[in-house]
Image 1 (cartoon, rainbow, N blue to C red):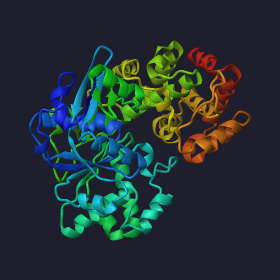
Image 2 (image 1 turned 120 degrees about the vertical axis):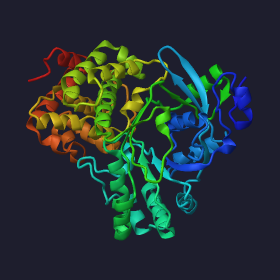
Image 3 (image 1 turned 60 degrees about the vertical axis):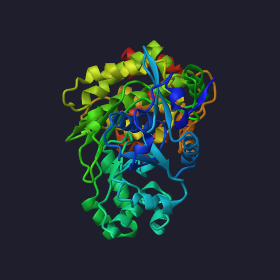
Length: 494
């Protein structure tokens, strides 16, 4: 028997799950959050729930917002359960469910008037974002904001009725400026190096296309703190919904499953104020860059490295990939030989110990993280998580045998079949052109490196081209497993 998740049923639910210790009626909105997906609900929302459970800062509750069809679907699910979420934290040795309740409203996507009005409310002092790495309109090769993207051009031509997150933020800031209201802080919670700076570039860049004076005001007055976020959070599906019902008796339309580990490092730059998140484990530091570079290169880079060999070997779950000795050994060698040596020092952090912690997290079988999730959106993830390490090593005159192999594995994956001949289902906005280039690359490896918006200057390196070509040809000739073994044996060179 299950109990429908709702405020009215919390007394019944607390027999199997922790429930909020605060009265929801006491919360007041302070944050509008764009992109209410699984990661946000397992991360920022959990930290706020922890804070509200201490009885303080109840005027920093969340209001959801979004612009995509998936945002409308999430709003419908959450509204049907009073904006509550079941979060199941799963470590290797324990599992526990909690119900979180820091969200009190969710703005309807497609209604810019209501969204802009809420953004102009003086009570809203932070606007936060989890819109994925691909949501910032960045040119992959240059890493800069792309003002020529059709969605950006459309918002610039019609700034009063914007359809992008950044257009809505600009409209909200414009309304506040006209009313003499202090601007809110814009806080990215996405896995992007310098995510605050990237967000600033997108907001200011779009504003400048239609109103240079407003863009100048934004540059002078709006804070965009950088932050590093971390918590492995798989996608929700029938498996997760079933576990919430069967093990915890909770009928939740879209529960969140995640690992027990979580981390959030933030620059303390919030002119309009902020909740006291340091009391619940958030680290506030003068410079986030060392922490985010460590995480993006070692953890996210590790995800990107194992995704494609695992997929080519028909492995579905991340923990199963790590249980495969040749993949675990491949990741360890890649990290220790090529990635960790070029990650700058991080205050009070042993990078090799950090990697061992990452490895332990990847071995966690309970959260059910999947290889298809890690493999998706490679056209955005590879230029952020893998190719920067490749570029750094090349600029230092260092070899890139392992990192070039990662790129070759990605190319081989996009040829469309696994080593066993099974068809691969792609999940990437650039899937068609990646597939076409990967098919051509079987005979002409340079066809894949010709994707200059992805590979940029890395593809101009003679050493990288040589390593990539040899790795790709070996993958086609000998298969994934044997190619990985050659790399481990130090023999994947011409």
